[in-house]
Length: 188
Image (cartoon, rainbow, N blue to C red; front, side, top):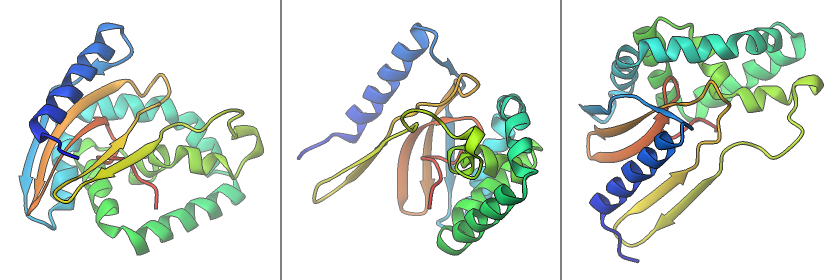
């Protein structure tokens, strides 16, 4: 399989413009970051600062349901297990989320809760969705590149998107993302 990375980026931007044209999303300014391999906090900090207002608005829309879930004993235990699992398996992603929290001024616990809202919903019968889950992930690899594709099926407050071009050491990637989420989502 032969893929041209520039063509993929242009395709993603064209798709975003189509989505914006029908009012399904609001496009935020593009985001560019260049850092070292371990600069996950700095990446998050830059995103948090760049999209502070949009992040605050999005989290405020989700906060009432999240607070209700996070105030229940069973959900607190579930949240603690999710946090411990992520700390063990993907601590760099939590550092990125801590950076987003610091840059946006939004509480880390709420940002993590928004990122894991579907998983948190499983601890409360009344919060469980009665239908298909949200997003899907696909990966396509050849001998030179891997492309990870993630569709975004967020709720109405999740409509502010941006295109990010990121370099972390030797790793380069482009993502279309919601303000306040990790680039590519979070689920360990």
